[in-house]
Length: 295
Ligand code: HSE
Image (tube, rainbow, N blue to C red; front, side, top):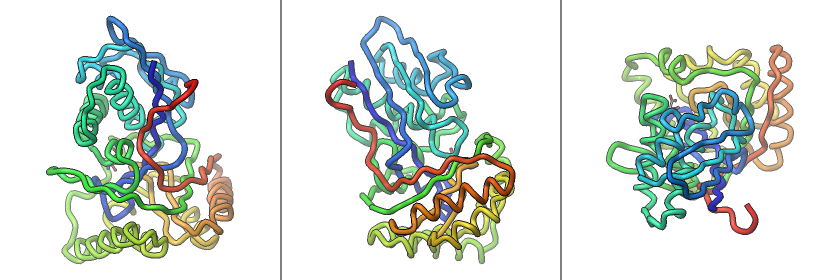
């Protein structure tokens, strides 16, 4: 039996829509696999009642099929579905890494990302590797059609998950079809600033680089209380705030010394908007990894 811990991820980071992503230290899924004649899936944990156990409809099952690696797969969800924290990507990445080890396939990272993205595509209808990329490689990733770049950045983050769901398809519906040249120029500036910040582990640069005025404002309207929540986090010392992935989670960048204050401010501001929320004090973490010892 192989057990893999597969991290939550945050895609987009404001200026890198469908391109940037980071792996988070926490939360994470745990995916356990055992060889079997045919694939079966059991899901427990956060939001498991909403996740299909039919292998054809579950990202991990599609990955097992793509790898021709039948297994009994148990997924313990630590990443709630429809959270904006890469829940289905965590399961797909965990399954890819676990089945690769179970069947001694020795696939390279890019191949694992490709297989996990196939799992994502089958279930979500769209292959965005901006969550499975960091879920497998860890760190900060830049996903493009022709490959994936990766930096092992280190930053303190808070991911705050309100107690409601936003479906990725609804969140994609609101994305504007075009942007003005001014907005394109602004986005390029932010994306470059963010990338430099990741290379330097600089929370001020990364915070500035989260700013983006095309996709984020449209997405923010789907998150109850977003403006007040963002302002509260900035007042508490966050260097930048954005919608995590397709939402509704909100991601804040901060100095380690401000992390507790920022987490409290986010939860309190959601509470003021009448929404329960959970704050994860986290950071940029590693990719999916095999758990040694007693899994
Ligand atoms: N980049 C994707 C989006 C991530 O924001 O829609 C969610 O699949």
